[in-house]
Length: 400
Image (cartoon, rainbow, N blue to C red; front, side, top):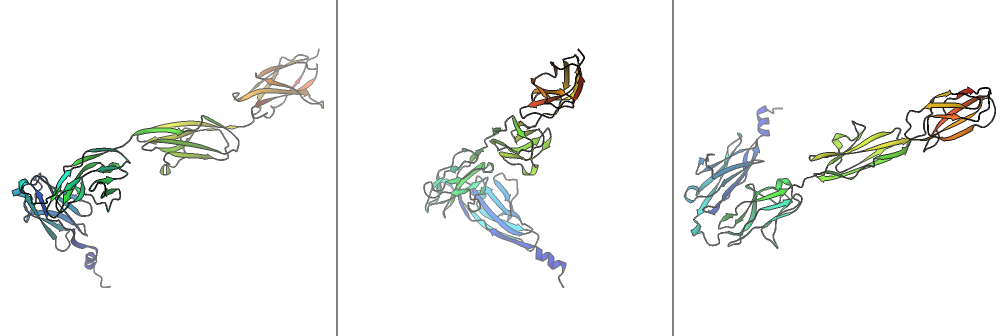
């Protein structure tokens, strides 16, 4: 119950603590020296560098300070000069909680003609490489020295740790010291250096650039719907659409001019199957494949086949004793095969006479009996079959 706000604030915060101390370095004139330092605490500590106890100003171009995430900092001196740079360098971390902490390292600089025996020497430096995204790259580096130097790598001035990135490996057997990058991504592009180090000293290679080329191919269809599918009423149909490209395109379906059938938050990549169930009406469907490099579309018509509707507006004219002329209307004739006329005397119990294969919307019916009342129907026929008859037309032929 006696839990004060002050102790609660203390409980939430942590004073700084150095987790990676800078190491003493022995380098040659004209080479590179790099000190790394990391600290933790809450809030994350700020790191400053001091040289012989004085804060380093940011005005010296040879001194590069680069902070990296999670409270780390790099001090890099490039190129190293003998009389000016041989000094004690201090990493100083503070976060406003408790006392600041620091750690020191000494830089020793050798003249090129006075290198101690066994000082590392890079014998094969990495060279510029261009690879295609997704491919592997190997950057070579060999060095000699006594004891044999250990080779490590730096990318954009920061050390590469294969333990935290499984795509990076420093090879041991057939190409010792080489850096292998597997399944490259765009972020691998950058400047790389190898570093050879033993207890006598440290030598950096010159920097080399790895370029990661991104293949760029606009979307194209490998499977697209046919222009038309004819289905029976109530039938099911699956429409498959597959597109490729680099980067791979999203594929979605649209019905009519504007009805999206694929949710924007669940856009499939490369392939999309539209499942249509219990189809009730004809409609147009469009497959859309899109990437940053373009948008392509493929449209199909799903047509519901059904029996034709009944002809309308049946009219009778030009009545004689033995013939009459029929005319009628039909809304959409494009799918019709022909018309059939059926007729018989109205009140007589006999089968209908039939005239088939009519391809116009008018016809003269002949050989009728004079002065007889007839009923007549017109029927439309398509490739599914016969539709229902029209309303009956009643006519009485003339007298002879």
